[in-house]
Image 1 (cartoon, rainbow, N blue to C red):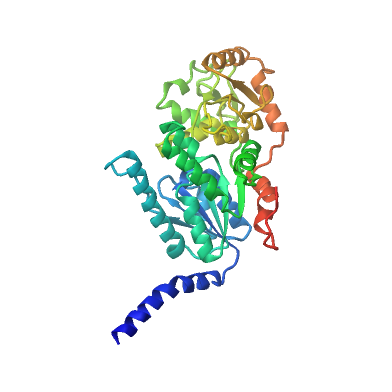
Image 2 (image 1 turned 45 degrees about the vertical axis):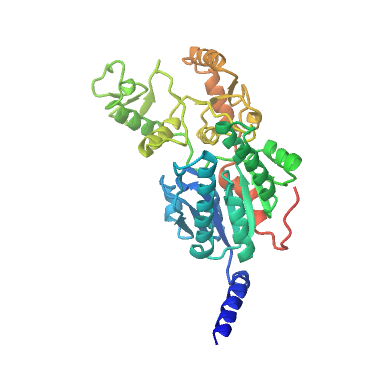
Length: 413
């Protein structure tokens, strides 16, 4: 009797995984996607845009990642999108650094696999943001294998190059990360990337075919109307003196900020002659959420943006410049390998090599600021006339056809 029980237990242990695979692969489902971010969902705008675009096209979307920053309101209110949070794992301050990384990766892998297999519903596709790819790529591939899903990797950059900024590119941990990323990246069914330069690098060095999907501004990135700008400047003037009027209006009933003036009778807002220029240098990684909202509001009202983003791989582009261009805001951006795919020097902004060149550009641009035909206005005009695609239009053309391929054969690029 005991032997029979033991035999049954062994049989169950042996057949259990096989039965799970069989059941998962035959689980009835419609068009569904799990968008995976091994990071703060609220600080991953591109993946939020993917989720919204998929939901608008009728996909049921599970957005899986860490809690933290608030995602976009439209995403939170969409009934086709379910946000599933995973516990964030931090390094434990015990033992050598390599040991800490290993423990973190193992715990992350267990938590992520648990969420994908037991908390998330079965899906047709898993769309994974990379980086970070360790352990995300391998874990998502295992989940896809067990559930019969397809794995799509969206390459924003390389994990190993980001790790190399901290440890140096010759460090064994960085070399191990590169080997892992190159090996596991080939397990995917489809790859997206952010630049043509990255697409070519993936094909040449890693034998991975990818489709370039440029970051594009969402529809809500537009110029702020003068009336709204005035309200913002007046509000900021209560706390920050640079936004207050430098001189009182001749008519005491007029309301002034440092940049604008409101005629109380016509309710018309105009920009002041001789107003100062407003320069914004912002980042998506602001810790204070209220300050981040303020920066977004200011960049829609600014005259010039400055970007100091330098890619660890030289193959990705700064999304803040994409957002600024969505507001028709010209930029001065520091040069790196593939920046020309976004910033066209002397057309929609300027590119500089160092602080000295940036200083010269700022002097030149603002010395002619009072002229109506100044270079900043010309850059802004060029941005308006370029009729740049928005995220939704670009996604419909490049990504949606890939998710609706009916023959199960992914396009070759």
